[in-house]
Image (cartoon, rainbow, N blue to C red; front, top):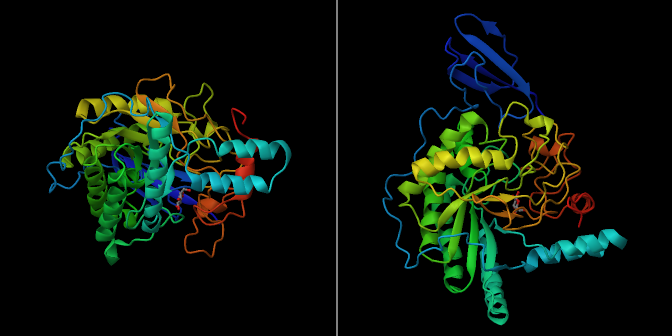
Length: 443
Ligand code: BGC
């Protein structure tokens, strides 16, 4: 069941934000020397205090990042890697490895289908998709993939890329529930995470001939930009920063891993008021980590449903001039460039084939009517964008709709969420079949 949430912002006579909150109570609207403005919505995570129409400064989010969030200061320089990254797009000149795990999921799903749907479904197994290392137990399988990719590269003569998502922070998914992870900050989480990274590094080190493209910790830094009003996020802030710093530093030592930090999406950090705090956070973390040379840029729309570029904005985006990923990227990139962060991007379009299917822009869970989107490509038409990728393996669930599960999140029971849905990361057959049938372009 969803909760109705109200968030309110108080602006002074200059239109500057002075106070903001989110809660479940009704609030009296008031106008005097201060204006109290309230918005009713169903999602506290993306609520916005929009700019004052009388021309004051822009407002902020539920948690205005008025104090710039900085990374840890104890790590001044990145551990040296012996190699220099390619100056250009790291996807070029390589083939992308097809992970057998996802292919097996897709083939098993297709075995239950018939006719053209089955044929289309089978074709998905041939589309490169990132593999999420969401538990430490999964790390050894990376070694198997890398060995396989290395052999394929040697026999074809074209070097291979293995695409991975680093996703095991302690107190993971701090502003939601569906993807809460295996490590807790209170129970040795940071040390456990460092060990998880060490294990990834140990696997990758054995295969220097395979290039790894890594997306680092979906949602984590975006939560630090807008969701510090959520206690779990506030409590996780220092640990997230230390862990993400450790991840990019250690991966940087390898010389064959190109990292993209996750940067939410247009409907999150793409709101004008969030761009600058986001750029500040990415840059401070990067610089405090010693500017690791293999950090290539940012990943956007990971596991979300936004359009890359559209001429007809989805009505849910109203109020945000950055209503698609490319607009968001074009708005963020200059801020990154001027502060010294490498402004290159990859954009998940795996499930973005169909728009106008959400009731709120903040709805992220198993959105009904979704279809597979633009295929992975480096022909993006934009130099800022290295590649369109498929980051979320289409068919794996976003979160359970079972309200008695410890990882139940109300978003997964909204009317625009496909139900009944199993636990996050597990196979959701009906959802997969819809992605296949609604694919745009068609499979
Ligand atoms: C889940 C992970 C899963 C990933 C990819 C996330 O939402 O929490 O367990 O690996 O999606 O499906």
